[in-house]
Length: 291
Image 1 (cartoon, rainbow, N blue to C red):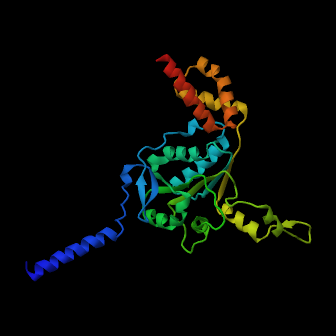
Image 2: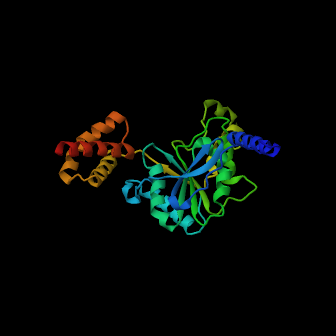
Image 3: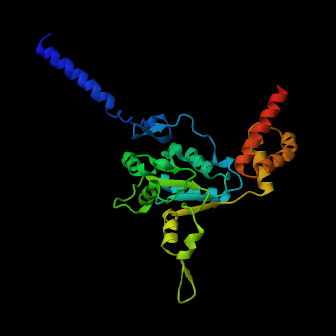
């Protein structure tokens, strides 16, 4: 073996060792694979992964939230059509359709160029990278953060705050942020926060710096949409809708009312999510008994 052959062999071994410790190349998103994507991490590198099975829920499936539905649909339509629109914070009772409404809007406007990117709270610090990745695309992107809340000192809090309104760079025209949360103020509130309030000469209370900081993130969302617990009749109406969609007839739906109420009592909630879960259980048992 010549000296050149030995040199080339050693160089090949060295390159193999370098390849094993270098981070893998970040996958390039294939925008043709679908309308919804998730932000994923691999060896510390973020990338967009297409969602293979997107929820098929439609706006008509969402019952008893007509006001909220109209607000979100209108804002999303403006955005898709290139008109001014707002970032949105959806807050309130659990299981009332907050995240389902965002998924339904995707299905409503996907054929008009709307795309959804789901980002976990733990990855909020990557928001600038995500925005840069899609900024030159012709599609319109909603960055979706579900069940959002922060503890004191979390890095994602500052990143989201800057992404909404606080960076030297303007927010991209083709990106909005839609977030859901069970609480309107996204940081925990403590009794000690009240000690920062001051009294003005006019007798009014003025919040201190701690309270101002805790509400400042929510205020950066241009549109706040609140959801409330359902009444019993609302809950039963949602149960009836889902049972009908699962193939139950009117008599079966009427017979299910008592079981539906007992199901909600056991769960301690009359939410749309509980109604959907009951309907699946009830319709499945009916189908099994008929087989």
